[in-house]
Image (tube, rainbow over all chains, first blue to last red):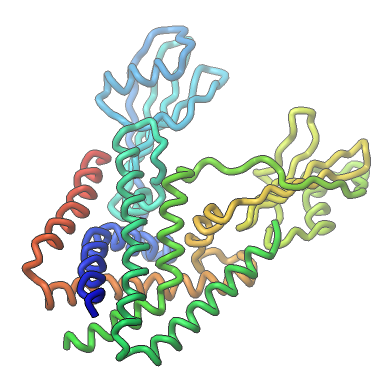
Length: 194
Length: 196
């Protein structure tokens, strides 16, 4: 049984590291599954500023506006419009839609800020390490480490349960039912074709 | 009390083991793919004879194509998602959990070009982990997964809370555990405040 104390320590360390993120994912999953239970309306504000007339580079206009108005985020899209540009700048929980008018040089910024549940929802979806905005890259890296800790939690948990023996019979029934149901269902869905 | 909570924790863990692994892989897949990059290259292409009825609208053609092909685990393309190819053929993307069943209506040739774009396993697990009973129109098989996922969601929350109890009951002065909790929670709070 020398393995057991080591597994127990690894299980604990994986668990305590992952638990804040697991709770964040769990609570936001409840919000997504039961959206009617929560008020998700964001607070919307608008502001107008001016940039140069006849600008041709949407990204440059956006970066200047971000510097002038003191906000940061990832430039998600820059689209040409008949009047100028439409740009989306996002961080989890906050979306800024920027509209630039080439003839007047006016920049309108529409800011939507989510409440706590909206923020949790967006954090649940924020993933990926190949991001432009450094804090989003860091978030993606942190969540990748959390994902490894979750897998570690599962593997050490199963291993410990097997070594403990006390709950083996009922555990085998539960795990067997869980595996049979889950794997069969995943296989059937996957085999369902495109 | 702790013995009962330990039993609950173990059984909750065994009941959600598959989901825990699926969520872990989904997290790694999301980190790699970023949730945005999706395959667009077809795995296979085939053609099916199809005659577009005279004076039919795009919406009517889309419905007729859906009824003709009855693509597996996909719903009809919504009106706002009807698209045109650069050479002005009607393009219909029937999304499902495994990828895209892309159909291009070649009206003058009297046939449909059908492309199968398949998500890899990691992307499939990323998508399936997010399936919840909130979606009223999902296919029956996916519905079975969704209800199971819903159960796992609540069980996992219980698994977290009982795990915290067991830690504090058994090893409340474990410095490494407190340090890792502080690291995990601190990183979350720090990034939350940066995003706010």
